[in-house]
Length: 179
Image 1 (cartoon, one colour):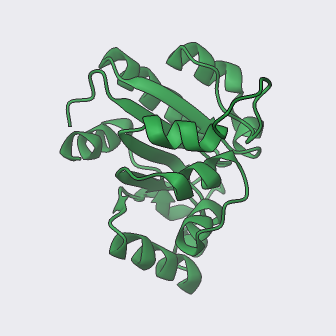
Image 2 (image 1 turned 135 degrees about the vertical axis):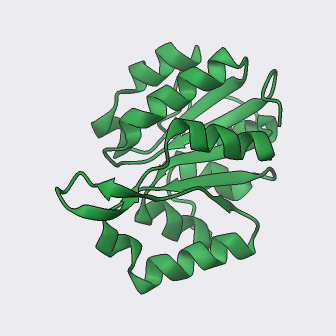
């Protein structure tokens, strides 16, 4: 996919790897994509919405509710505008919500409403990644056509070494290009 003039939702969840997502948003904008960042409450604790607003040139979406009334629900408008969605980092929490169709916040609700390709970039502790429920959720998402990028191996934020690192920005961009 040539991202020029494409609208890409970048979903950011609450993991330390959220700092890497700032680089992804920056690269997408350099490639002339229109980027809509949708953040969970937990993501806002790791990286501020202002960071993503500065890099994307748009207000980051952090709530289902807009400050101004609109005839169309915010999550539907965002989903309708999107050519692609990338969730990076994708925590065990968002993977479970996606697999079960749970719409509990701005990001999960937008993803349930989305009729466009989705790429998820898991990032979590190695034990979490190997948990049978997480493994099942990944299988479910793959069966539904969701592209899974990563995770990689290396040092994790918890101080352990293993699988669970979010994929590098270049690897994510390559997956986007293939969609």
